[in-house]
Image (cartoon, rainbow, N blue to C red; front, side, top):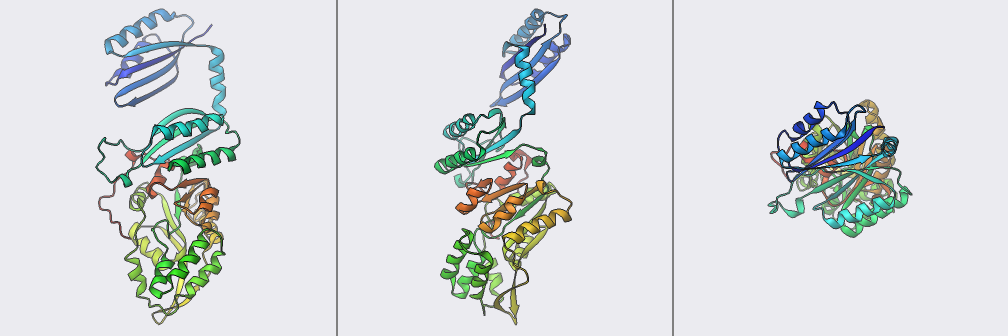
Length: 414
């Protein structure tokens, strides 16, 4: 009969500890069926599932392991595992796996308790927990409003009533002021290659049409129409025509004046710096205007820009746009067109936006993220980020803070 043992080792981490313990097993030719190790605050937890060969006795092996652990000043424990339990564990490897990301300015025990309770109630098992964000000093010198934390759970199983599961997670985010992303763990999550963005209220903190309307004296009216359009209460194309009409006669020079006071969204420079370093293609797909899209393209080194073009005659705006309007349907089409041009599968794409006109492209992309979005968008999109900056998208793509490069010189102005 096969003898299976789970060995658990804990204690202060030190160089060569794992090598020393496995050298004991190596001396007896022991197969290792599973192994896992983690270190938290220099405290090691190491687990190994081993099979004791039929011709061997476990007694001398355990004796040697106990003596070695004693000399290293660590704790060691042994638990027998039945072959029935082992085969059950093996059979579970075919179950789907998911990733749940918990994001916030700071993660608390209440956040963990609420999230893991929902996970358990829906029949999912937590296989692994990892911290993707960097270590925080006790006295954090940075602006608390700019701190960020992300914990990632690797889950196994089938969520019971996935729609209700997501709804309960959304309730947790609303009540605790955190973000929770839930996505399937598959090969495409690790092979993203294209990231597309809405511009207004996504890459920048404001709506350009509202800023232009202020210069034209129609600010209050246009802002009201913009808000209703972004909530999905008005047809986007018709609302765009109404708003642009109020700009008739505005001088072209106002475009630069408005551009110079635009603010990039928190984390934008850091995000693009790392996306380019990692070889991603990037694009702006915007219901805003090409002039501002190209302005951001120069600052952030963006590969593609598609937006609406303001008609300008004799240095003044006519109150009209030229060509096909970039609305929600067109954004989804452009996402597909760029993916085809770059020979990228849609499953390898990421789309980020905040308004109702972004929903078609968010649904089409492999990973659609509602960023600081209107309620209808946040509730409809599968993923949402509201508490952190744009660079939190890197967490949802599987990157850790230690993988990222800092931007040497960061300007908050667009």
